[in-house]
Length: 226
Image (tube, rainbow, N blue to C red; front, top):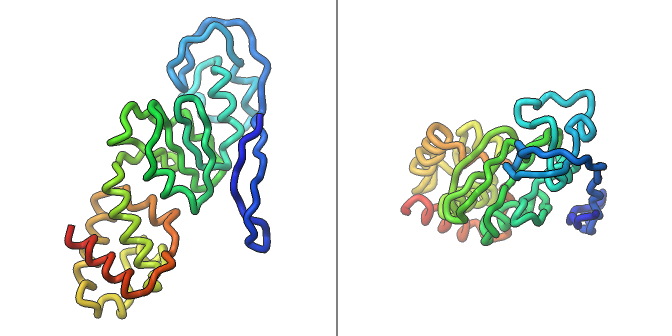
């Protein structure tokens, strides 16, 4: 089994990579898959699809269903599982995949390090209005309105030259603070960093918008007046 993944080469040219999904031999055994809750009459012994370095035993049982074992190949990627279908997306595609409609039930996984299995930590979303995003080992509950507002803020700030690192440290440069919206933007950012984890998602994968600085300022003002 292979899944298409849009990525870039060393020169920045986009191409489609074929990601191979490893298939594991199954055995007859009645069990409930701890990762997805499915009742199965055959599956894969967990030690057959994990390495000696695996430590997340509290999230899995002795056996895993075949659908979940396929996700063991995807620790490097961000993806969603919707109605049993896997969708891979790169960093630049995360926002549009959050904002589109999803087939329920679904899981949405955003990997920061590309080093951890995350699917068995992710809640299964039964609604497409309010949903959970598994952001590395943290589960973040959100909705499209919140995501749109936070991505608008972070991405337009990047257009104005503010780095994601600076925002994550609640540091806005003097040229922003001198704007009519500067202090209000600072308070907004401080409040989100203090009281919400949702803003960590656009601070990880938000992209500088290809718009004018005036349009970026107007968008930020709109966010602050919501």
